[in-house]
Length: 278
Image (cartoon, rainbow, N blue to C red; front, side, top):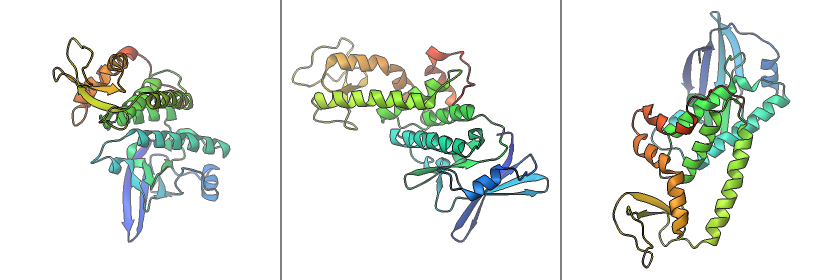
């Protein structure tokens, strides 16, 4: 965020404010009156002024927790990722209705806030970034902070990050496709009988051998690496194993380790441009 010089938090009794200082001088254009006079869904209330040649913007974040703080000590799950993405899509649509530029939404984790189950974003007038690039960087944060025991979270984060590697991508379309596939998976799970011990109502932890044979009385030989089983179909087990093998590899490396292991995930999309349109 080259446009931003610094960010500061201020606390007084029960009130908390986020202060953002920018390189450009403060300008009272149409954006500030529009933001003051309207409660725009998903956008924090903002005040602005000029201070020593800098733009100074203040956001009331009382009672809110930043994404950065929320995931300091816990991993991000599917429901969290889905909540943020859907909130962002609603916010972008609301901004367009008020003729405000969605590219001015800040998507770094310290500028995204949550209260109860609702997410809020900071709108920074004059910000020179591109929302598509900012969201791609946010998708990398999702992967870095993933709970690798939440397989549905892995699927969603993979689909989102893969989409943002395209030159032009449609985030709304990605979410609709994910939702459609999720409905199919739910129907399949209802048809199949769930194993006695399940993980997340979907997956059960079992053992596999190099030469996998039909299990006897639903008990597996304890050899080789662990894998996840969906339902009781061996064909489905093998299919899912191939599909998510790269994710299990990344899952063994990423948590608590250097971000450099990320290249293992995007082998099929290496070399693509990151610039895109949200």
